[in-house]
Amino acid sequence: MDIYQIIQKPVITEKATLVREKGNYYVFKVDRHASKGEIKNAIEKIFKVHVLKVNTTTLPGKAKRFGRSESAAHRFKKAVIKLKENEKIEMVEGV
Image: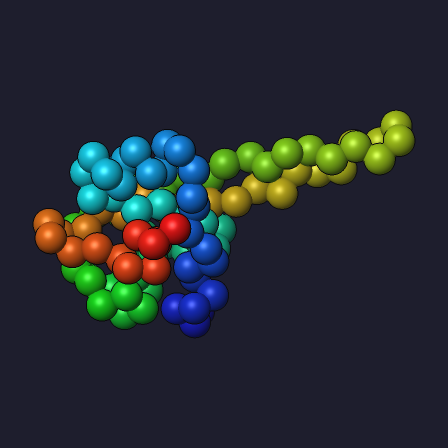
């Protein structure tokens, strides 16, 4: 799998911002089939940083209703990345 397909986009929420300020963690939406090792390698190669820890969770998406029927929810995977101290990802910091 290509490293640019693994990392889809950064998650910019209030909770993700608080975690980033408190402990040098970054949150990304990643491919559902990517492993922790693949996520770690992708982050290190794309952003040129050292990853200490990767935590992942698969979240249920919102179900959509069309009339009487309800479609299946689109699940997605979220990765919380802990970086080495004094390192940061500039692309996410500016947002």
